Amino acid sequence: MLQSWVHFAVQSLYSIAPFANCSRPARRFCYEGSEDAIQGVVKLDPLACKPPGAATLLPENCSFSNFTSFVGYDPVFKSVGLWSRDAFQPATVATVSAADPLLQYVGRFEVSGGDRMFDFAGSEIRARLVLGAPSNVAVALAQRHFPHPQGAEGNTQNSGFQSNSFVVFINGTRQGAGGYNATFSTSAAQQDDVSYDFSLCGAPLPAGTHDIRVVKATEPDWNGGDPLPNYMRFSGFRALPSARMRAAALPPPPLRRLEFLGDSITAGFCNECEAPARLPGDHEEAFLASWDYRVGEMLGASVHTVAWSGLGMVRNCCGGNTTMPSIFRRRLTCTKLHLLGTDVIALRVFH
Image (cartoon, rainbow, N blue to C red; front, side, top):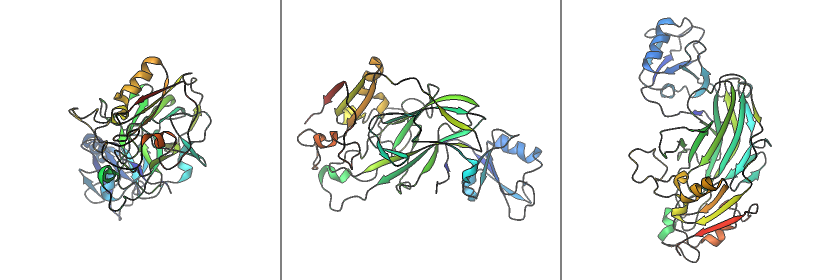
């Protein structure tokens, strides 16, 4: 079952959580928004349960009161989100599957039924989504990380879980905290290969056509000398609530493809080390600031990057038994199959 919608980072959230004895029509819903918006609900909404007798007003989001399923935005108080304790009902969600032929993929992806699996930095999902009504759109991603090896030594000690960070572009505009920060990151609680919804921007998208890019900004299993599978599984896009959504044809992808094989500098490690503000969990790594990504932008080419901090051609910087010639042949860290042909391969490793 798909898990609850993941909160996008916002500040100063307030909520109205109904008591069990409330008999108002909206008794199943927790209201969430800014302090001013919630005060507007308290004063003017005749359907909502009101504090102090029928609800509690909290300086917290609705999940604090165990309302964890996002339903949509209030039709009158449009900046106020409605949350429920009930699981998502499939009939209320519009979807575009990962298998939709109108989606485009850049980088190495493994087909798994209707899903697409990937783990390398720079792996990119592109879609043109047409919304029939204002909708909250999320990307459905699952994550799997294998257990840390016992008695690991040298570089292999780093083979524990690392979060996966993503950058989202909507109609060419980067979403999130700004700079080279990620738009969202996975967490250690999401290693179970179960699909979670990650909001693309934290607010409803207007009706109409929107070009979406979701780019993986971090390595598969950072600096692991004997890398563990740490892959993502993309199921599709989901729009709430009860939105009409379909995919449309994108412009053709670039004719030229560049493939880069490298280590930390090619993966973009530490590109954010001196940044004044950054999101946690992305190990100070920003693939979209890497030299290989920028070369692709300058040449108007698709970039396929196979890069891993600490791994070399013959030996690694700090131990481990896996080197880049083995990694280069793989679509995922746990498979051995390579991808389509490329026009140019660039190599930059130190060992």
